[in-house]
Image (cartoon, rainbow, N blue to C red; front, side, top):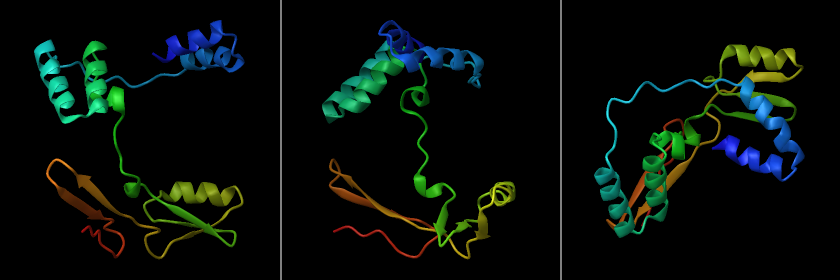
Length: 154
């Protein structure tokens, strides 16, 4: 898919599109294991109809692309990883504080590049989130386990 888009850019004489295909040919990507099961048209059609009935056009499009292109769902929408789970850092007064979930090797590399780096005494940042489920008329909340606080909805 990316190569098709770049080919279009090359034909349109967009300069950056000429460099990218060369870079892509030098890259390698891990391969997923062979499929054990393949979705049938009837299964895909049933999911698409449910998505249409629910008014979820995004899920309808994802399912259609997934089936038509024989892709896995992660290939279409990516793999969701909540931002709150990632390690964090905070810079203030020329000191970079890192959460202890960041590897020691990263801290050492940053120090070698001239940064003043300290381990943070506690988690940096935090989040609370509320999801509105209109179909069930419900509010679903969650709070970052590394911080105090809670998610409230009313």
